Image 1 (cartoon, rainbow, N blue to C red):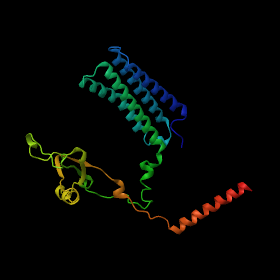
Image 2: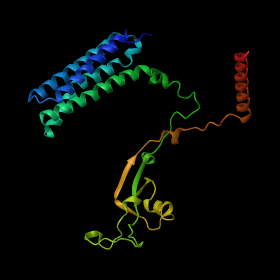
Image 3: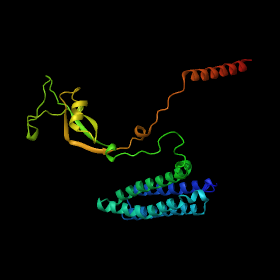
Length: 269
């Protein structure tokens, strides 16, 4: 299989052109050229988008390896060249950016766009071995579970804020004196902590079991409670692999040590 880009020179040329255009955009953003700031920034943005599209059009004539996802990359590049400048212009208008601020925003957006496209392109070819065509047939060869079924709630949690009272120099709890906080203990922000409670577990029961025994004066500020989700792959798919026997490790260390001693003896001979 041949690489879709026949020469490293093409990579270098595209990178140099994008870098030059980006530096030009940044330089223009620091100048006060009136309405020409915006015009120059948009012109450079279109040039960069066109350059990226032309770069990915080269993929069309590559080998079968490239054809697996060349169309995907070309579509991403084309959509980026058309959609992003329009969205960036709308963002500038909605927030009332001036010409200089708009130019700076466009410069940063174009840098991020170019970096992400080139990084994605490079990664897809560099890490080609993990593409679905190779990964799926080999997924069950390492002894680890290929798939498992979970409930959505298994990945969810509530982040509760645990408060502790503020105390004065005499050690007495400081109480509020105004509004809704009047007569209530005031939280000490330096002692504030958080706990992640699984969605399928009662918050109060968790708090009484895991927090109260250690900090009896703590309470939950329910107004700060947030709900989140995460997929901890190691927790759900990790399979413990016991270490090698100690005897085997000792034998390998001895063999390595003997080889080092022999090499030193040969050097001193």
